[in-house]
Length: 272
Image (cartoon, rainbow, N blue to C red; front, top):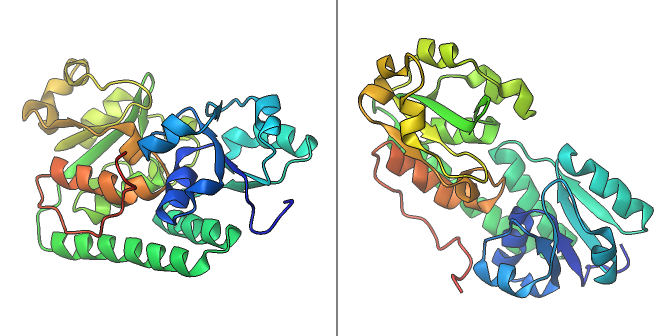
């Protein structure tokens, strides 16, 4: 890192963009991922330098970043290329709610905004606790979260955790502990046996087609299919390992389960 705090930051995934904006540090951002949509203003105004598993290294270098923020082993190759180019990188790998909160605090420390980051993280910690308290005593429906359809991939740990917080029971909790998507592949017959009462689906990068889910062989016997309880949750809300999952993602699951929302502080960046 050339300076502390870094004055020029490139974010290769959306959650660090949103976090920096929530901390009031958006002016430090000089480049973003092409998948960054929160806040919309960042997508409009900041140069796009990467997809998820690829990045334009020369374009990133041209931005003269003091720091690049990356996420997961899937970006390890990008990180290696940036390191060889002499650019400082911090790689996050948050997989659960606690990890998201730690990411917020770490981003705050990196930009010398520890107090604001601690206050923000503390407020994010409070709301899931209140949501969980509200869910106590209710019937807990069996929930299958589908992260992909070809092959079927069940939800990652933080999604399973949010399902539990909002009052559902993930039908594949043991798979949720697996970080790699290929380790969360499920057979259609396993879903049939699990008999979920609710199906939540978020196919990263493409629209969920409920009728395709309902028409899978034998699935008409699944309670969620028989009752028409198949709900799409937009992937930027629930699959992003950052503030969106703890705000709009949490709300989307609550609504899908038919539960009332729990009041929250204004957590999303300005809509413009």
